Length: 226
Image (cartoon, rainbow, N blue to C red; front, side, top):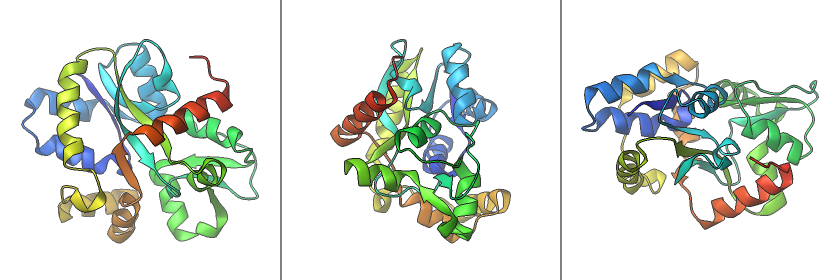
């Protein structure tokens, strides 16, 4: 199984879970080799250069994909999907879902996502609009930023990911991430460990009825046809 990995802090609990699991070593190595930003994983899965990945939720609607109810979700706030206030209109080349969301929300300015967005937000939150917060104001629903999709080895991935969800229903139930890993991400992303831990409290992975309803509304508003 060739699994593509989004190399962002928001999937740190999943990555640690996979690293600690009983997966064959060649699978674990492939995950590290195939890590990238969402937009590039979208392209890799579309071209079948990987078997499965958590990709942009808007991309996951393509009929060629099998999807699991597992992804990157947030409710009311997310801290890492932003539009910069008083800035020139600019999309984030790493994203598909967030660029489209900014248009749905009629937000003008620079779109910025992922760890670089979190790094800026924790320093000067007053300079940014949290798109998850704006989405909640509009719909009173959470938002699904990404979803697990596959073109191959779907049943194998389903077993692995369902076990992960059982351990990660709420932030309090999550597998504790060792300090040395937090230290590594803190140093490489230049974000404090406390800010990383706080941020992960906003992220959850189980997609339920509200998240699916939100995705349907979002897709309808983007007029995306797949």
